[in-house]
Each structure stands twice: as C-alpha cells, then as structure tokens.
Image (cartoon, rainbow over all chains, first blue to last red; front, side, top):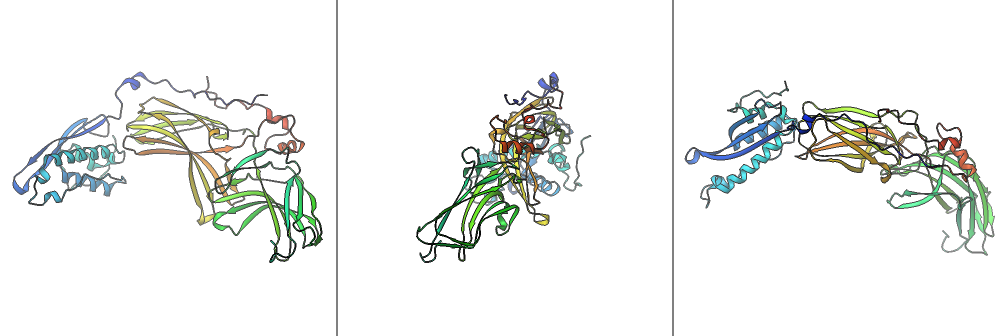
Length: 162
Length: 336
C-alpha cells in the first residue's frame, strides 16, 4: 500500500486589493544630500549641504522638505541617536582633521573632490539612519531632517505616530 | 593486554543473532563521521553471542568472571567522568575460573526497554551499547558494540496550525501561518506569510531551521544553537496584501525528533525562524518552536515477530495494522 503523500498545496489566502498591488508602495523614503556651498570667509568658513526628503511615511510630518546642514550637525545627530536610542548608529564619513592643518598643497576641507566624497558618505549615512524603525521614533531625527533650525537645547523625546 | 609479553591474552567478539536480517541505520559519530549501526526499537529483544578467543592456544586464561551488559547512557561532554546510565542490564556468562580453549557464550536480553532515541550532539551524547567483559586481576578484556535506537510515534491526534500576527508598530505587520505545529522528519512545512503593512524596504525573506541543544540544569543551563537550514522564500520588496507561500521539505535536512528533558539531562528542540532583511541589511525575525517526530516506516508483511511486538508499544497504536492507516485530513479545513 502506498504511503500517504504529503499535501503540499498552498494555503488559502485573500486575493490582493488591486490598489495595493499597483499603487505606490507605503515605504517610500528618499533623502538626497546635494548642492554643497561654502559660506563665510577666511578661517570661519564652513560647507553646508542641502538635505532633501521625499517620503510617504506617515511618521514624517512633511512629505517633502529641504534644509541645509553642515558636518557638525550630522555629528550632533549621531551622538543624540547613540545616547537616546538603542540603534547601532552607522559611522559618519571621516572628520578629516589633517585636512584642516595649514600649508597644504590643496584646498584642504574645501577641496572639491573631498567635498564630493563627504557628500556621498553623508547621503549614505542619513538614508541608513532615517530608514531605521527605531530611529524614526526620535525627535532629534525629525528636527534634523525637517525643522529649519536645529535647537540644540531641545528636550529629547520619542515621536508617536498620530 | 599481556603483562611484559608473558601470560595469556584473549580477544572478545560480539555478534548479534539477527545480524543478517536486522536493518542498520546511519548515525553521526562525535567526530562527525557517518557510520552504520544495527537499528533497534523500544521493547525489542537484544540477543547474540560472545566469542572468547585465546591468543596463545597452549596457555591458560585465568579470569574473575565473564559478563555481558546492555547499557543505555547519557554522556555530557563537559563532565565525561560521570556517565548517567538509564538502562543497565547484565548477564553473567561465566563464573571466575580458567579457560584453556576459545569459547562461545549465547546471551539474550528480552524485551529491553529503550525509552530514548540515540543522539550525538554538540555537548551531549546518548548511546546504547553491548559490552562484554572478561574480568582479570590486572586488566580486563573489554569489547563494546554500539547500536542505534530510534523512537517512533504515530500521527498526533491534535496537530493545530500555527497562525500569528506580529510586527513593529506602524512599520511592518505580517501574519504568518504554518500548516502544523508537529511535523515528522520527512514532512513538508506548508505555510504562508501575509503582509498587512510594509513601511520598510524589504530586500528578501528566508526561513531558517534552528536546532537548540540544552544541557545542564538550574544556573548551569547551556544552550547551543545550530542553524540547520536557511531557505529563501522571497526575493524582492513585498507590498500590502501580498501572500508569500512556504513549502519546505524536511527530508533534505539532518534532523532528529524533538527531545524534551531527556532523563532530566538534556533537550533538543527545533525552531522555525522567519527572517526579513531590509535594504540596509537590518534583520527582523520571529522564532517559533515546532515539534519534530519520527514516523515508523511502512510495516512489511515479512516483518519480524519481534518488531511486531515493538510496534504495539507505539503511542496510540493498538496493533501493527493500524500503523498503515493513512493520516487523517488536516484539521485546517480552509483548503479548497
């Protein structure tokens, strides 16, 4: 007598709603870091980058936003996240202290290729961080991405989806 | 074995009486090699003969007795000195005396209880073996023969499916379903993953089979996890309302039955681990225990009488004919 063959037919599942199947996915989040600009004169110069967010995630108040941030703002965000959340925060592109020394042959930290490299590193960093479900709950991330000005004396808090 | 080359020495040989007809099963040794051993079930009689061969035909062999033992024991690797014997039977074959020529002794251990399955793991070993011993003043002559024991079960009466909704609030909600909670070693895991909410960027999804071997008790409990299988079930980004099927054939993997608190010394349990990986290599997972059991093979007409007795001791079976009944249809009557 033949052994019973296991029933391997698929389990019943609900047919998918066509809007869900062909509509825009609910996980849209794109952050571009672009348009570096050096402001100030002499030794007080620094470079800012344009951070543009496009998303349909409900946890972000604005579906589109643009702000300008400098490297030290990214450092602030990183240290806030490390302290306030359980996220293992990825590293930032290098601080390039050597480039800040005088008497270099190139433009130091205002060198075009250096700025380009740093810009790409910052874009990788912010996309990695902003996509983390736990980081998305932190007020500091939303302030960094979508508030015009970062209030460094803010009270750290968790965001709850409305 | 002889002292300074003088005196008589002897060799022992152990042979089973049904060595020709008894099946052998593969079992991994501690070193990881696969070897074949005679296969026994609970309740079967273990019988055979011990042959004592004298190396020097003209010398006498003085001895303090000859015996044969059937032993089932648990060895914890970190505590090798202490073997925990849960089955220990002995038959004396000869009283102290002397031999002038080689001899053969028949033995039979009738309807031996073998309550647990043979197991060789990372930190613990459970084995059954015959041991013949010629006791002597200075050093004994010993011969051991390992056998393998399988514990069989029949289809469980209650085998509900596993269905659960899990997720991260506002980020990812899924409902997973596995068709059974108890699977036999050659079974197929049929299931599905239904996506209720997807706000993260998933790259792919896999299902892993994890074996957890637990040894020790109280504060000294030690878990050893081993990923037996990784099976990708989805490649790409799902959206809400999507259903991903699972069909995982267990026969392709090295699995043992679930062993719970064996002689209060160790456990071997199995878990299905559903893992989702997103674009940034972040892993989201949900672990769920499944019970594995060993199904008896088809009972052939030529099956020995002994094995027929053994099969009557299976849970839920009253006669060996019942073991041939096809399984009941699954309780989950949502099939079309």
